[in-house]
Image (cartoon, rainbow over all chains, first blue to last red; front, side):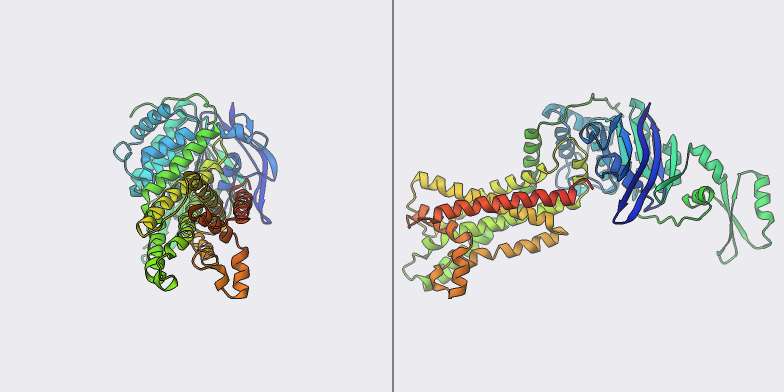
Length: 291
Length: 264
């Protein structure tokens, strides 16, 4: 069964077409990643699916409910973790969770119990009684995610969940996100990082200029990019060539055969978002990264 | 790691629960950022000491000026205290938290009502303190318990109206800093009224403004209730102005909230 279906969704803001007929299906209990650069329309799509924004055309259902016709029913079945941490700085972590628990329809005691449960789960028990203003970026993000799991809703939206986090916090968050599907929750997340989509997602949709340009499992997409990228630089460090390879020695020989530059240094790197775009669209999309 | 227990689909929270939760949130904010509370009490108290002890002797050598000026100081105090609502609202609107509220199954606008009720409580406490200080400075009201109750009811109505107006300003402002700047204009209103000097001492054009602006009848009514001066039609004007300001501010708040945080 599909937890999310998107059919021909279009949206313009002030004459600029942000989404041009997006089509998607997300199977229940899976992690689905929307991969694309800034301005591709990822956040707008998430906002439409979480009822914040009304589409100009097309239909979308979330957990079996139409986002345009039954927004209140959709709201009962989702949680959204946006790009900026939606936490109350003045309150403590525990107070944040309890408040959101009450606002989610839990009784006083249930809200307190759930708050403690989630603090423990996200490694925040010690910080639970401190004000959020004293939290690090990683702790804020963990609390943010904990809040969106107060009711363990059928569908969870995560808009760039790890942007701005250090490697360790990112790894920890990845584990939490992967764990969500264990109890049947469907996760739709956006990311600018291929590695993140690769680690987390069962399926990936590459989105560019408001349309899905490629969709498949991480393996399928990577197969289209090639295994790794060989970078050849001259002694001054200027890049002479970047060549996708399939990761075999034969592929490597083929890649470097064309280069007639004896002093060039060779480096291998993992495919980047740039390479995915090159492979699926044939144009190199400038991937503006932030944070 | 403990296992996450799944919860069945919960029914949406009752509107009264949402309201109570947001009031509690705003009250906690007030208690944890005492600057606003201290400002709301300290500034009017300082002004009162200034007016009664520094200017008072020149204005009325018999020392009766304190009686005259207290009603105006009470409203000034309410204005200062309500102004921080604009900043609170603007802060909420810029933070991601409003987006989360909007994806939850309740009316997100309730967050503003929470700020307004917290401001009402905060300002009534500040008003009581200001009246106590006034009594220490020689303020001798002649009000009966019923007149006291009427005074607090009118002050509460004024605080409610002006707080909603500040909430609307907070929604209209582009940032919390701007919200605090706009709020400054409203603070001047008490000076252009009968708060500090009788209106008939002002030049003709200024007198017209002072006579016809909302604060003058409200101040005259409080003065009448506390000190037994003639109220006349001012009582009705006071209630009418509060109701009108509240109605306009409520509509503005709704429209601005929709514009800023509505479904786009």
